Image (cartoon, rainbow, N blue to C red; front, side, top):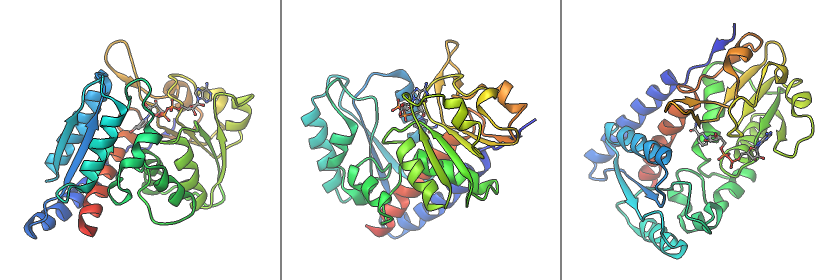
Length: 280
Ligand code: NAD
């Protein structure tokens, strides 16, 4: 049965380090602060935002939740992001999704100053990342590489199939994996015969947001599987994109949901916020 690549220990280590650095900043009279802009009534989004706020406060990072309401005008969201970007007491700015109808993350996130863009949402951050220039990567994409590093998976030369091409996960993950000398294939909803591609990969990164998409048929014997998906279940639980029971019998290693990529993502947001505060 597949080795379980937990994210919990790595997340705890990253949080501890962030807390130490936050304490040093506070002692120097520069306490770090993260602002999360919310414009949705979505329940799972609210749950995620609260978990970020809790983790931040535990690490000694102030967290302001700026709730503009589900009916917020895109212009108003943009304005708030610009204000927070200009506020010297704020070091990290996140724009939570989903957004009101007609508002596009890639568009609005252009108003987040790139030095405070701790979730890599500004298209300039993604461009810099793609060009190999310093930038904050989207935390989830960075978490994929971090969890593989932590468990000793050497990516150089491996064939990685990324399932999903979103601006927040699939594309930045592909860039980060290329930077680690992996050979990357990016698959998406229009990919013909997904299983034929993923089944020849050494590593499969599932980031489609479709419960049960990746079955045993999609995975080569012994492959490493990273499950980024977070799909709410009817009973209030959470499942990934991978049929974990079936895949665990065939894969060599698999990240769990919950307890895999998720906690590492949150911890990396804290690390990024502290980094931004240290520079600012
Ligand atoms: P998205 O909906 O923006 O993108 C989904 C991508 O998957 C698209 O590129 C689409 O082409 C592809 N796709 C959809 N159906 C497919 C199919 N049948 N076959 C192949 N490809 C398919 O979603 P996203 O924002 O990139 O998020 C992806 C998943 O990751 C979601 O479940 C989301 O909740 C989760 N997520 C988790 C974290 C975390 O911290 N763990 C953070 C962000 C997102």
